[in-house]
Image (cartoon, rainbow, N blue to C red):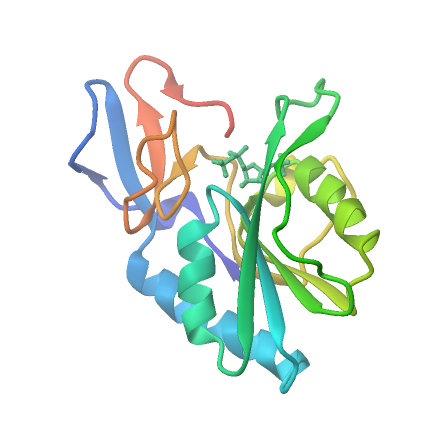
Length: 201
Ligand code: PRP
């Protein structure tokens, strides 16, 4: 598993859409993401060499990760999306998660790989795993691009992890701040002039 530390982050850079007082530093470059996705795809295919894989993306942050990973996976691949909203990620939150958009097709009997951009407290994934398990897939696995291990509250884990990252506010490659920055090609740290840095996603 790749571990990314703050020391590897680059200097502040200017990107289109940057607002006054906001600073962006690359944490994981698009080149590193591409290489890691190839390894993740190999790991998944090693476990399921011939099985059709049904990818489930959790909107919206996982969109680029899912589409890039799907193209690295050989063999038969299908995908679906669902959307949930969570009410706060803080330690005092109830962890309540609400389904906003359900799956389009049944997952019964399928080899399902849940695709998440980031695993933080784990409360969303805990809800999703219970939700999916009730639908009786043949296999249920999780792949996450980023894992903020130190933020975990729920006892959940992904079978496949791209990068373990520090507790920094990250944007890009699907991740947002107020819906902005999702289209950055790299995973970046977003910092603020007045506040130093944001507390969490
Ligand atoms: C992010 C991410 C996970 C969740 C993880 O979604 O995609 O679904 O947070 O957090 P947790 O482990 O603390 O539950 P977000 O709510 O930011 O929505 P988005 O994907 O639409 O940006």
